[in-house]
Image (cartoon, rainbow, N blue to C red; front, side):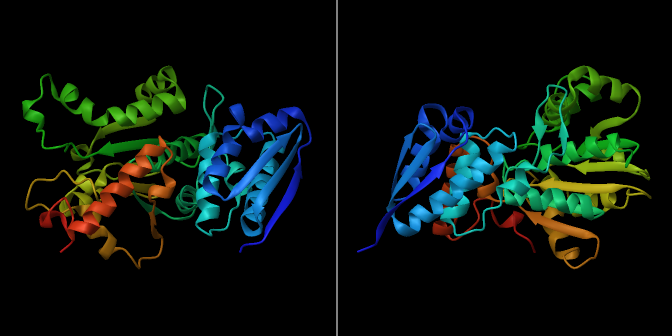
Length: 333
């Protein structure tokens, strides 16, 4: 029989208690659902009952959340959910490092910062290395954080312009079948980049930067034949590049520039028989100094919690079937 015990945690004031407990005590209920404990809030004090090991973990988790709150940060149910996943997975929890690493503040006062340890590793790699590959599923923040780092680099005068590009390949559609002129044809492929920049900068600031040539958003084909000096360059959806396109893109890098390549190798939309330049790059550049690969996974998903379950369900299904759902044509040779 496991030893049962109790532990107490004192909160400084009611505001901190409300933030720690969550709306209708939702943060505490999540912890009770995750660990074999009962949590009793009374005023500004919490009593935790249950298995001694679980009680110790929950107290440490709540203490770290409280430290973050006392430093002026707000926590969300998503933050608590991530913290519980870390602790349950026997990983070391260091919330202070995440909450204190503010990349920039948007025009609406929103702080952009890594929300998981994987995202923190990714952001640190972008600061450190000349070329960074961020690989992971949808919702892990790989594109959004890279664009926030690009804007921060421009504001800190570490780059004179920001260049954002994507291959115009999506779910089998071809540009020729879309209505409108060339710009109207490629805009749908670049829309996710526009949306993120609107959130980071505001629409007016984004348009001003585009008019002044500070920000350029263009299809990958527009990069051919150029040398990009003193720039922060982001290639998004890189799983849809061919090896030839990836080589073309990476060799555009000029002096004083930084390159970030993002993609999800489980979502390749290339035609049959075409190999992904992103998959190939993992083998070509794995031991090259100054080039790093950061792999994000379902633990780093910061969208609706169901997204994590969707990713896990696909992983389980593919393992059960013994093959990749995407087919052999998209497997690395």
